[in-house]
Amino acid sequence: MVPPRDLREWITLLEREGELRRITAEVDPDLEITEITDRVVKSGGPALLFENPKGSRHPLLINQFGTERRMCMAFGVAKLDDVAAKLEDVLEMQPPQGLVEKVRGLRKLKSIADSMPKTVSKASCQEVVLEGNDIDLSALPIQRCWPGDPAPFITLPAVITKDPNSGVRNVGMYRMQVIDGRSTFMHWQIHKDGRADLLAAEDGRIPVAVAIGLDPVTAYSASAPLPKHIDEFMLAGFLKGEAVELVHCKTVDLEVPANAEIVLEGHVSRDDVGLEGPFGDHTGYYTPPEEFPIFRISAITMRRDAIYPSIVVGKPPAEDAWLGKATERIFLPAIRMTVPEIVDYDLPIAGAFHNCVIVSIRKAFPGHAQKVMHAIWGLGMLSLSKSVVVVDADVNVHDYEEVFFRVCANVDPKRDVLITEGPLDHLDHSPTLQFYGGKLGIDATAKGPAEGARPWPEEIAMSDEIRELVTRRWAEYRIS
Ligand SMILES: Cc1cc2nc3c(=O)[nH]c(=O)nc-3n(C[C@H](O)[C@H](O)[C@H](O)COP(=O)(O)O)c2cc1C
Ligand SMILES: [Mn+2]
Image 1 (tube, rainbow, N blue to C red):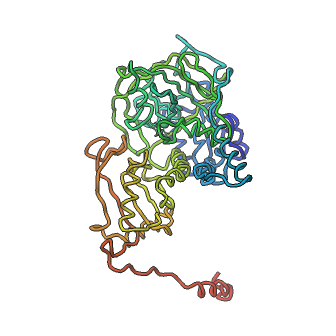
Image 2: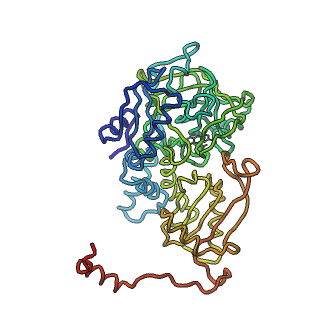
Image 3: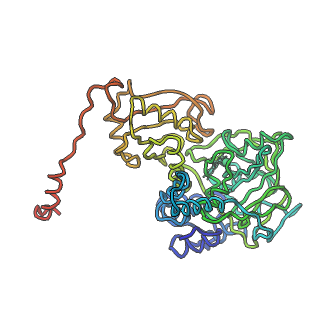
């Protein structure tokens, strides 16, 4: 299986696999689509293509990422860990020995070289070019997601900027509240790369391009928390096994994916700001109004019959859960590069990703769990994690019953709970101060005497001999 090459190929694949429903009835992007989608997402239902959204001639696609199966289909893999394995293969490269290994090594290096985006001169995303008075966002079926939202929000964009100093591209998924037909807010949170690009601009103004309606891997890559100096389109190219094709924008000095359905071009300035929100957010609460910069649009380009994709976040689980789970799996090898004692980790969906990390480690010395907590609090976007639970290597971090059992059984709160402080997620409403507050570490590993514990008891397990005997005789007991 290869990942779909554009949104249309993706829709065809979803439909062939019984993973898409077309809705022909006229449905309102104002709240009605949210309620329908929320019911379908929470019951594990299909992607939805609203062919007749009220007030627009553009179909609206939603819930494309809403299940593990569809997420795997997007990446062309059987399970998300297969994506991680591909990345691990390259990260763990050793100097090759012998001819066979050298050839294999060269193939791996080529897969990296081929990941670099390449530029094309003609692109379907520019079949229609709208400038001047023709620019009108109201032609798109942009959703107002929740009753407390003051306006429609573009929720699934890939926002493209360049670092004014290094010239390195950044791609991020940041919601955009519609202000009028030619402007939106740009919700660049404080820890994000797009905001850093704006802050680095000498004249306080940067060009911005927004690509909407991409192949699913490229769309995913916009949500991936890569270090600032790495272009998310390179990751997309690597994961797709094919370079992302880019085309120059019409009115700004940036490039956008040639296969996009819709592109918005324009500028953002530091001194052109306003109150964004409130917005029914992925925390499950409304994020209160806050000052964010305004995106002024200089051109809209699109495919002739452009399809508009959207996503609704809200109380977990929502569709974005699987984008988050993809990141959890894909980034495990990279995390292990710096913290190799980590066996596995899990970011519970109900914890909205930044609230809780469960991590299993190969414990080798006293205080090892605390070392790993601090490593997580120092690692990329994981640094914003509010709580970290550490368990031993043999505990399945994805089995929350088992993790809860270990936390309850193995923790002396006075000895094994660490309360500290540090940076927190922009959207977290619980800390006294925005951005900064308490952090909780729970050491649920087995403790030794050097950590102040009494001799640790042995865990109960049946002997292999009796287990085999019972398996052999099972039919004889006539239980089932
Ligand atoms: C559906 C969805 C919506 C998101 N909305 C925002 C947003 O409005 N603002 C923001 O800063 N991050 C948002 N994020 C998270 C960013 O996309 C993510 O942190 C990404 O790594 C940002 O790119 P960057 O690391 O290049 O800044 C959203 C993620 C998803 C999946
Ligand atoms: Mn980035």
